[in-house]
Length: 180
Image (cartoon, rainbow, N blue to C red; front, side, top):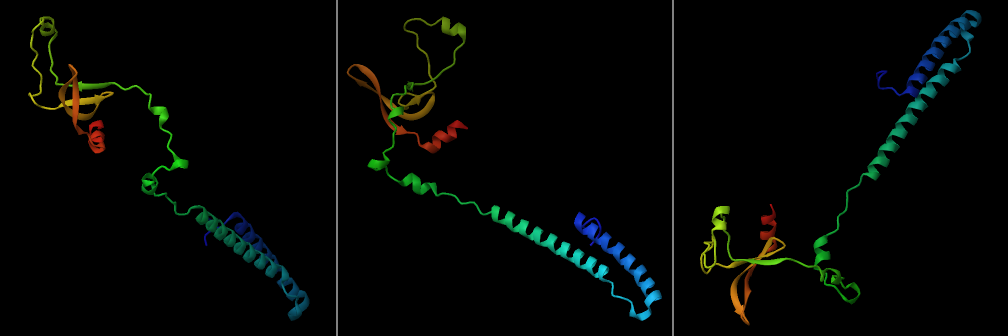
């Protein structure tokens, strides 16, 4: 293991062990000079080695414990299946409260057709003038709610008033494609 990879504690323990080992060598030489072959064993060097090994083991155990904690925190997310929730029909105790949106006003318009005019042409219009539209006779009217196409239909007269009989309701998929 290089010195860069060692933790601060391991580095200090290694330095301490090296200094104790050097001191032990000096003491061993002195003991051999003074006592001969009956020199006492070097307990400090053994103790330093044991401390270095214990610190390294403790550092590894702490690292493994931290990794296990992180792995436990990062678990596979769980998702609700919302299709099952959407299929549930409201029961008496689960009655959906939609009454608050029933009184919201909406602009509903039926469009017979469109055209573009220059201002000078618009100013020349008078009673009895005819404006050509972009739709053919017999094509369905388009029904807009708040400016969004929701249906198509045909013109009818009901009690001397014009009305629209709906012949085609725009699907949600078509409405989404119109938004983009």
